[in-house]
Image 1 (tube, rainbow, N blue to C red):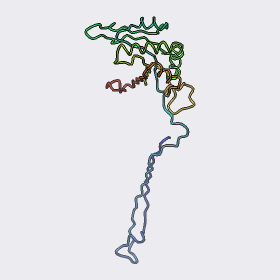
Image 2 (image 1 turned 45 degrees about the horizontal axis):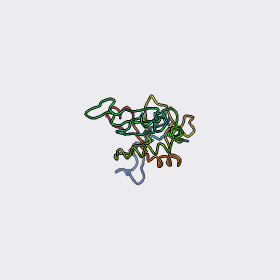
Image 3 (image 1 turned 30 degrees about the horizontal axis):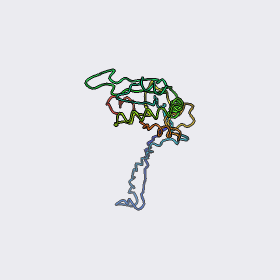
Image 4 (image 1 turned 30 degrees about the vertical axis):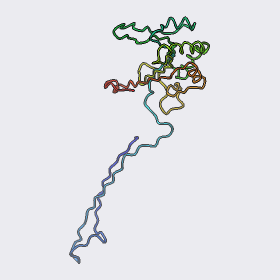
Length: 223
């Protein structure tokens, strides 16, 4: 048993309680009354001691991906590709879903993406940057041009998107279990090379994280 709870009731007849009970009548032939004392012992629930990391019943599923994007209200993804000489993985055409009165999507987008499951955010960023690094100077030039077209910029962004408790996603460590064989998908950091690339291209870092726990999904909450 991990939690024990016992109650012990003891009934003890006592013929005399020194200092506490004195009969009114004493002497030969006068029986001494007996006093019954009820003693009750209750043991509070006590959790058994734990050793090692705090165990959890299951891992937390995490689905995540990373992309670098150039965006514009005016310049199309095809025009960006012609300048950069690098084919994007995905493109978005402004107004392709709803052209008027308010265009949806609101921007043209050129994107290099890593959606490979089972990789940490660090590894996904590294995959994206590996492809972008040879074109860094050209990307910086295009980003400056796009920023000049639209002062609402910046036009360049490194985007990280994460979904927690997504049952379709891969599972990371059991929380608190550093010895688990599953990859650690929770923590991440940006190395100096990534910061240098963001600085060169004038890109911003944007992180979107969503909790898809059923209770949160039902009431519309999340992060």
